[in-house]
Image 1 (cartoon, rainbow, N blue to C red):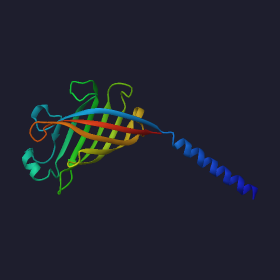
Image 2 (cartoon, rainbow, N blue to C red):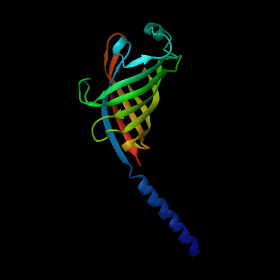
Image 3 (cartoon, rainbow, N blue to C red):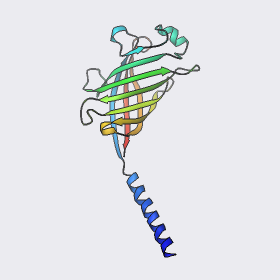
Image 4 (tube, helix red, strand yellow):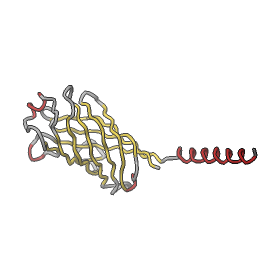
Length: 177
């Protein structure tokens, strides 16, 4: 009986200590702006790699099947001339017949400040109808190795016909072990 009590005590103490360590995860919060230029010729930071290059035709077909590759500058302020933060590089592709819904997969490469050289990997659905979009942070490198979390995105400016250029605010919450 004493042996069983001792084993149970060790089990419960081990579980308690592990639970305490688990709750002491580091949380990092970052904010930056992405500047995406699309449908504007040689200055585009996003280019279509499939489908029609005719934007009006694509809108009429809900963009289904259209794939874009992008390399967008990131800044700490909402102006493109604000202090540089890094680059956002990846793809977005349209996946719905019913509404305009994209799916994004990209890497945020941080090129300045405390986290210089670190990356965050982002993935998720981008329903055009939502004002604030949320994506999963599914990993990272450097200071964010094995990081996970949430990225909230909100468009703060659209320019040109059909939103040919956008400034997008990003708020990231990253959980680290």
